[in-house]
Length: 123
Ligand SMILES: Nc1ncnc2c1ncn2[C@@H]1O[C@H](COP(=O)(O)OP(=O)(O)O)[C@@H](O)[C@H]1O
Ligand SMILES: [Mg+2]
Image 1 (tube, protein in one colour):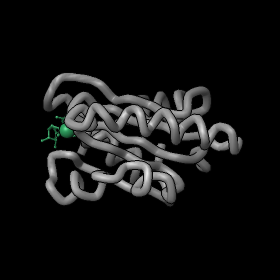
Image 2 (cartoon, rainbow, N blue to C red):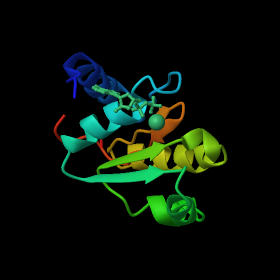
Image 3 (spheres, rainbow, N blue to C red):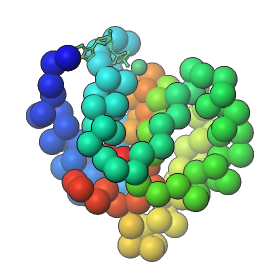
């Protein structure tokens, strides 16, 4: 596996400023792999892959599913559930109000949404 330290540093930098981060690019460019690499460095990570029926079911009631989560939340293939973005905005705003950070990683095929400030410096 080719390490991607510059890309990981860019995600970290983005999270210092923004509550959510989107990874966007053509298919097979490495979005999911990068998200997983990034997530591996975080202690508290929840990963959803909206190409999996089980994960689609987990997010059928998104606010209930996402609001208890802390740490980094990654939602791969988030474009499959565009209505999720409304919930994400609400959760991100709420989280900000608590002085914590949320982020959503949207990897045009792959996305993620996290809910609190990244402690160590996505996920
Ligand atoms: N850093 C990397 N080092 C080696 N192989 C990689 C790397 N990133 C992606 N790949 C490979 O490229 C292919 C596409 O990666 P993937 O993350 O699934 O792309 P995407 O999510 O953008 O469609 C996969 O076979 C994956 O193993
Ligand atoms: Mg992918």
